[in-house]
Amino acid sequence: MTDKYKERRFDIYGYEKIDKEVLESIEYEYPEKNTIVEYITDEFSSVCPWTGLPDNAKLTIRYIPHKKLVELKSLKYYLTSYRNVGILQEHAINRILDDLVEFLQPKFMEIIGEFQERGGIATRIIARYEEEE
Image 1: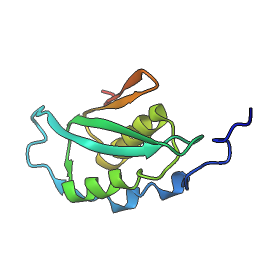
Image 2 (image 1 turned 180 degrees about the horizontal axis):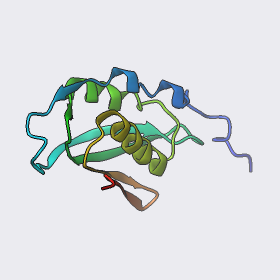
Image 3 (image 1 turned 120 degrees about the vertical axis):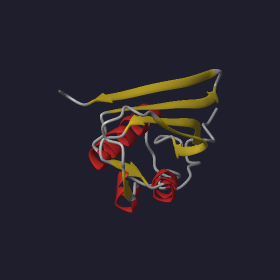
């Protein structure tokens, strides 16, 4: 029996398509407070690096800003840039955390990715950053 799926692949882009340059910030006027900001979307998607099949997730970005807030339109463009990138789910969540921490320098940040079930298994990934004192 031949594997008829072996040669069936979709176009997959590399990490170079992740567009962190699109991110913009807004000055945060309350740096002395520990206000928790959350952004939630059900529309995050990337693709499996081996099959090209879509990985769809509910994404929660939770952070305590220091001096900057991320501008939401730019965040939407940044997250959409993952759409055809071949990246493991665990790597996508950690890459988002790394990019946003580098850009915003928050006091605290947590990224939660709740990926839809495939093959009977759903995946939930939580990556965290805490500012060193």
